Length: 107
Figure 1 (cartoon, one colour):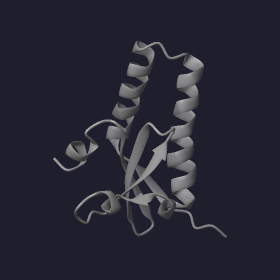
Figure 2 (cartoon, helix red, strand yellow):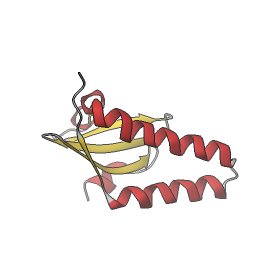
Figure 3 (spheres, rainbow, N blue to C red):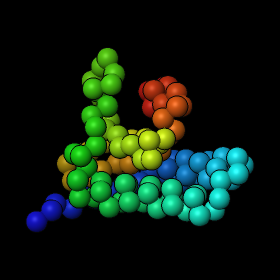
Figure 4 (cartoon, helix red, strand yellow):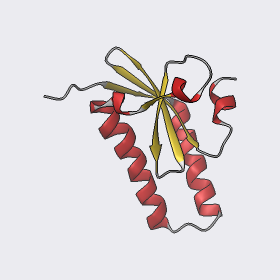
């Protein structure tokens, strides 16, 4: 039996998704392509993190210091950052891989 975790989605996630959608529309992505990406965010965040949050990568492995952040890659272009606190999975940001995500997370 799989363990269910409580997902806590930050308000910032909604803004991140709106910004991703805006740029996809601005640069001419088809609505079908955008919808598929949004579903992948839902699948990665809601379905997989609710049952298997440890499947994501420990962010400390990419940094020179310890942190409690973990991340999942979506479509090789976006990173979903989250923390695990007991039975709670706190989803905090969705950022492009090519962004300065270190500055955003640790400012």
